[in-house]
Length: 374
Image (cartoon, rainbow, N blue to C red; front, side, top):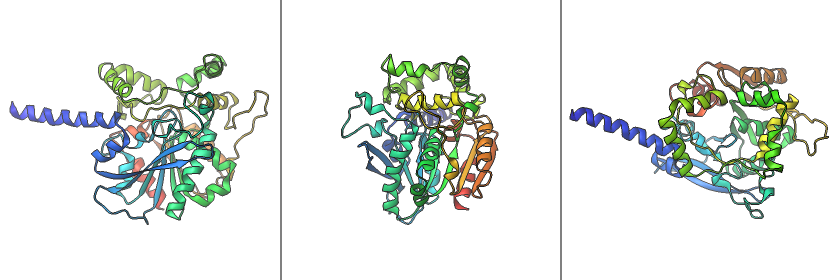
């Protein structure tokens, strides 16, 4: 009996440790797992102060400046917590343990990047940005910052919208990114959202409605909810009681087979602008990958992805509803003559969130590492 109680206690401690990772601040997560870090402040051209976390190694170890650097960019409505909240199996820890200098930027408007020298989050103009702005302003600012520290090119891993923003920005300023990036990795590489099998996007496309314009112009809603630990914990507890409902939400948003996914995944959820969503829905309606129009009558302007000539590797989930195989097939056709393009096929066990939150299979970790090192 005593043995059973001890075993149960150990198991519960493991569960609560995982819960701490899900809803805690990134600095606490890093310390809990024994990693030393630095928090860098990067100023964008429009005066956003971006928080960029750098894992320098295990606590007590010396910093090795000659290590290869990898930047991990999170997706929409998320934060860099996405990369450190899968327990010991988190992708940031995987690369840190293999000798990489891991950098994790936080997009403007999120908990770690809320400050702007000229604007308040209460100002509508503060939230006036799309995923193109994230690429042309945030990504350029922190890549220049990291490049100046490392004195050499870095690797870039973009998850979901993190991939969209580098594709958009690279196509607009290819010379800048060629000089600073060694290779690009796309996890759940969302690009052509009109090829998505996401139920809600399909519904919006079917009814031909632009609901987010209403949220912005009529209701005054310009951003999604900001991160609070209390809200995260509440979401986690709700899923503990209503597990089928949380799985149901995941099934309709990202993957129909979420059994490999952490069913309580709430980590990294954070604010994003409504304009980012509007830009995505604009591309949904137009059936391509276009710049956001300055007015409704503006001609569609596609991003010239063929400007991206550095090594590019895509990792695709067979059960990913946001970036399905059809999306990757389209990208493969775009880069048909790109000698450095690599499509790693599809992973049967991967949906969308399982790239960063799955806790049973990690072949895509190994394949990503091999791609970067090849």
